[in-house]
Image 1 (cartoon, rainbow, N blue to C red):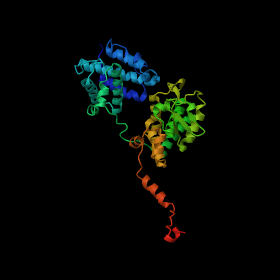
Image 2: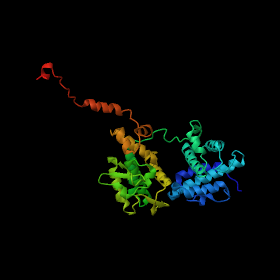
Image 3: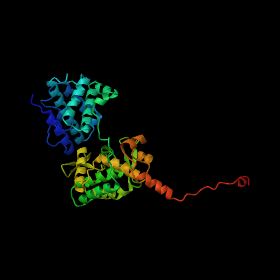
Image 4: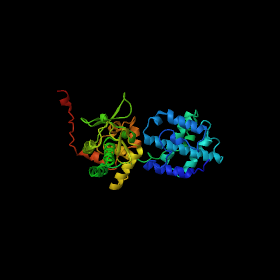
Length: 368
């Protein structure tokens, strides 16, 4: 067996999340990235291949997402083999792992400096792998009030990160300027991705799956989600309309595909049958952000959409409905805040309006 350096592999994994995995020939979609000397013939490889081929959210995803998940699965396997060889894990078989094995595995990941969000993604993959092996250990730990606290928890939603409308418009203006002076579909797609994310507040996964048929231009309403029987709709922020229209006009120079954002191979070759990868969308936002001096991630546009609605007086109920949340509590807790100056401004407007007082009738008037 060749020497394994799990620390280096896991640290490289976080870097590749930002730019895509173009250097690892084994990190390809599907099962190809799971072979080699490392795995050999063992239960880990068996259940890994079963996970990749049988889970719908693995086998029916885009190539970029499949590469990312397969890479993570392989790195987990490297770490499991390394820990087992050092007698820190009792087994490498996902069907037989216990609480001690799971806690040791994720304590090692934490000690190597992985971000909480990355840890949470590894936990999701490990949970699916154990479940497909018939082992409900992680589900049981999650259901336990104390043991659940020992598992990774993402910190991405702990702070609400949103931007005012002026910052969002500056971000879009930078993207538009670059797209208009470039002959590369990449820059035009980046402009459109930013505009749709800001204008409709869609999630990154929903954004990449959008089709022209989803956009109802007569009322600027967008159908999102993956359910045909119960589709969700969201409405565009009016200040973003000019950017949406400009992108759709520029888009006709490159493609007539129904997919609004066709996949890009390299920097300019379109693949009309596939959608952009999550890494490509992230890279587009980073490029625009560097030019304008704003660190805005794709998911920040969703919180900004909700906050702009609140700042302009939409109200929490309307904002929650447009963001397609099941509960107003979700919107308040994770997405929007009442700005420090908003409450007084609204009261000032209310009391500035002339108040018509009702005249109380006297006793004689009551009997006339």
